Image (cartoon, rainbow, N blue to C red; front, side):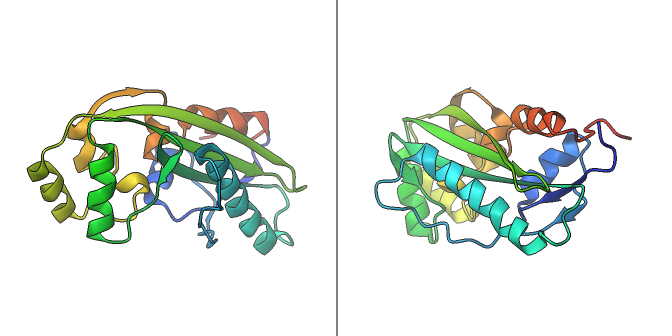
Length: 200
């Protein structure tokens, strides 16, 4: 393991930072990757998560390419979908209402891609796919939830660790992936690239 390797997190997400911290990993640099996250016509949820994670890492790589020696850039993107329909981050209470109404009583999938670029510009990535089942929600439950504003800046309009956790009947797959960063896949990639995840 290379104890000199630095980790650059291409994200401003407090949830992703917290997951890394919980794993004992403190990023050396945290930089938000400001990219266009619009969906391309006909783009599938899985492909969208992979593309956006790649673009986030690439954005930071381009910014830091003259100062990236002994560094790894880590990014991630989470996409929530019912079938092939992507449930984007709501931008209004109405959009949030429609998103939660759509998820009510249904199975949906959460795709999170973690991407790492090394100093030579090589890409490494893993995709975690998790199935989540919501209970049937009453109008009262949905309207109360929307008023809490817990849907703001959340893929699919909810956070599994937030107020919507009582909506979830079943989860099959990676819990941390639904939060925003698949722990197993992230550690697997970092260790494979020589990053000392167990350094004190």
